[in-house]
Image 1 (cartoon, rainbow, N blue to C red):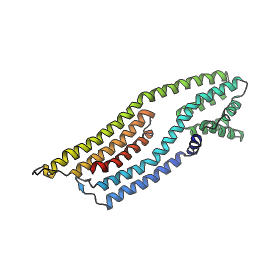
Image 2 (image 1 turned 180 degrees about the vertical axis):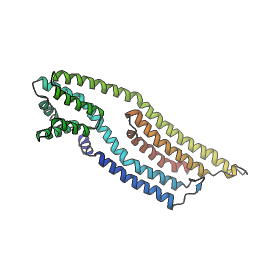
Image 3 (image 1 turned 120 degrees about the horizontal axis):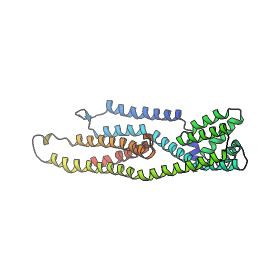
Image 4 (image 1 turned 60 degrees about the vertical axis):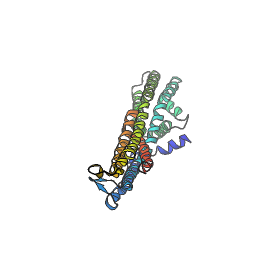
Length: 289
């Protein structure tokens, strides 16, 4: 089931990714614009304070980011799966050439061992070569399909090995060991940085709790107390709105920071932005009562 899912989702090319994001952006932006233009906003200092208005704006933002965040999550998992498989494939190629096979024959044997994204792509590469495409051109196409930095280096190793000849077995064996060490280093780094994800989620949760306490226990108490002057002018809805917008900003940028820390790219953080925005939209109506 896992392989089927990954195989299906590898068909999301960059063009399709942009198309899906464009559609979700149009739908989400349309909802936001309709809310701003045709619904009651209850503006205070230029800020919409109507609860359903700002919740709908948040929903529009969620619609914009959800489809690309899901696609990017699956794409990132596919890339990680390919990267983890590269040392194994290099070891198999080394064993094949040690047994007397040519590099192309070794690639063909390795590609047939199981159905995974990397091996499926290698099978397609071999098909292109058999149909008459230049080996280097076929490998360049493969590098673009695999997307990750590790896979680009992997293809470059194959290209240089085919060009230079020499002790192919030793070159592939050394490369396999190097990739294993790099993968171990990356896994250790992810493990060390994982607590920061928890910290960002925790800070987001604490901020929502602070918002609830500040408005419901402090500001509402002040407004219910018979008084005059500045306190009498305090509108709780204004503070509800302010805390919502600041929480939304924290969800957006907090998620992107998680992606940058854990995977080295802000795109990987879109899924965390989606999760935190969903938490905000489902819990904030409870906060505002």
